[in-house]
Length: 76
Image (cartoon, rainbow, N blue to C red; front, side):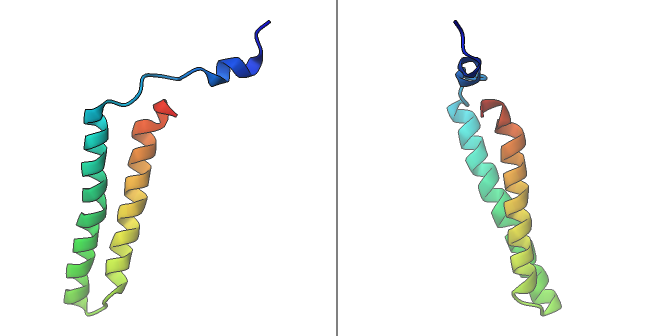
């Protein structure tokens, strides 16, 4: 007799490839560094340090998390 929880334990798809994981690492690094640098430059121009630097960091972390979730939710 099959139990309902057995179907939930089955994998949903193949595992991500090494290339996909490497691409994810590059994207996450860029997603954090680019807004961080933009925030640092904007802080120098607006003389608001470190407010915009932290804003850029938060934007990068949120954007990175959103992309990771949308690209890899099929593997969860």
